[in-house]
Image 1 (cartoon, rainbow, N blue to C red):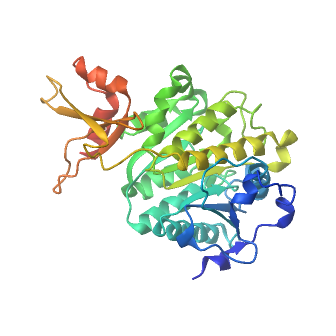
Image 2: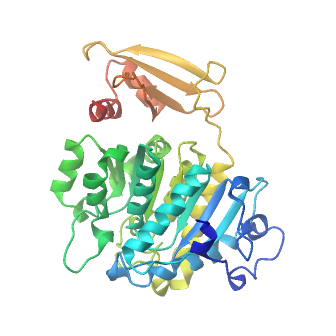
Length: 383
């Protein structure tokens, strides 16, 4: 099936104010009659017109066009863009039909090695993305940026409030790792936090992120799919959400996370959800998200990591950690990027040895005789 059949084209009225050559609008291909050739595209923007998964934030179905206008009003860099805006994905007759359509779109884009950037709609569309990876036979690291856990269904709330529990139970086999960043302890059931620890998943609360923001970079760098709920941004910087809260990430921190994600060669899907334009005072939220998308795209065109870890591109360090089954931890440092990785011991019959993004501090910690906690957690989760 041609993907063009699933999309409404980009409306000229959403972009007509940005005709000067310096606007990013002038550098992107857009579905306006002719559908982009996916074989000539690096990144595809996909608008979502569906909010039935979150009745409490009704109005999020119109978020995609608001984000699009904010993005296209930004200036272009010197990057050689191969970005296509596919338009807005038509919702299905039912919510499940909408999930199936998004799953098909994401799976097709993954097959073409195109990075989908999903804008608009509600956070439960993460479930459709996970199904796309599952159908493609890919195991991934799923990074969820959210102030809440989205694991607690009620009679009044929709799938957006418990899609994470469904992913972690019904689709857990697709996950190498689940990572939750930016949660706020007073908004999450303590039993959920205990369960994350029990399954050796990784979590970072808002306060930890704020204390050492650079510590989030290797966590974001490990993600194949990054799903961003804008309720994780403080309401003064992102008012367009019915579940906004006074505390949360700043707009600058959200953009920095987006930059980290775009720079990572592992990232294969990025999504920002839950913008409700009817609540967006002076389009603050749309502009925040539009700038986040700008940073993802710019990060993509500034990627430096060589994931082959060849001797010509990396320096290799070996550290023996006494007392921990005499495991040797091998670290790699990229010569161009300066980024660090640590190698896990081989797991399974095939002897696959995973590379885990880390910081220089993890190497220093290992030199002192301590084992980095993320190395231990991931080793146990794979065993």
